[in-house]
Length: 171
Image 1 (tube, rainbow, N blue to C red):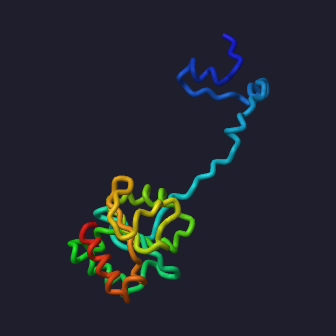
Image 2 (image 1 turned 60 degrees about the horizontal axis):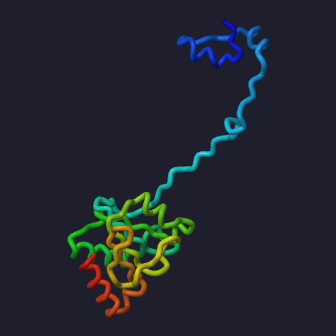
Image 3 (image 1 turned 135 degrees about the vertical axis):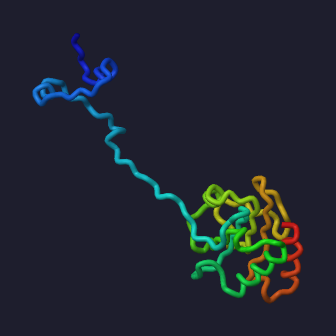
């Protein structure tokens, strides 16, 4: 039996075959396809630095440049609000979007798979996210979403705090 292509042996015989150097030089050179010669570029796995344990898949987006998450007084106010609603930091993930300028919402959505989304301030909106009406509950991609004031806007304005609290009771 004469076989022109040595690869055909693997279909005929089940055992491994090894060619001797003399046999290799007698075979015509087989061209490697260009696709096989391209280097494989692996994209690094996407990860986010967030505060909380994200147990209930509640995602909170904030924007505070130069900070890991948010100022301590604002974090305390947010924690107190969550406690009044029966939640804690273990239930949420707080992401400071100021630390992820090139991120698009789809990446956040795929990573966190949030059931509820709270966006605190216009600057916290990630690219690719169509902001719902501000200060009103909305269903966005089958998740309860609230786009409202940042804590910068709320801390000195009791009317803003009241609007925020009324909406949070529904969130």
